[in-house]
Length: 146
Image (cartoon, rainbow, N blue to C red; front, side, top):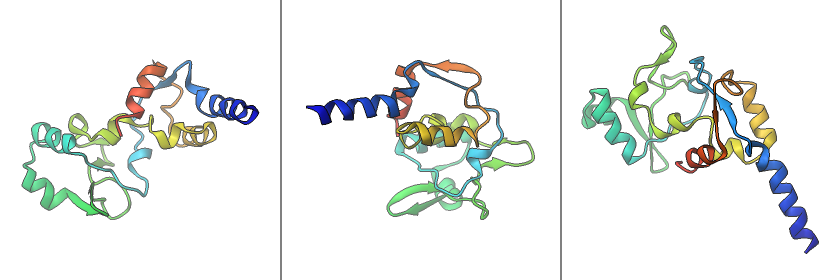
């Protein structure tokens, strides 16, 4: 019984830090677009990309998509940055059609499971802590989309 109570206390301390919500507003700094890693593309993302970006599915597959361990991902520019990040205008070339992974940042399970991980992310994202307040329920909904 005692270990169950201690586990519950740990969970509340580590994951309960956003019970009162979190403020976030994208500052279009590009920090999240210019890191080593993959942008995973889900079927609904492909539909949105075709509908809103002006690209055909064939064009997306030939030019912008790749496969890693059976997952569809965006190719990068060769320097780790997302292929759709435009460094001149500091923006996403397909913002309205951007994939779920981008739409839900920074509310990812990998960043919210532990306060220390979240605190680390606040050092690279100037939008965390400013802008509109996302409620606990909104965060949970976004977190569970990936």
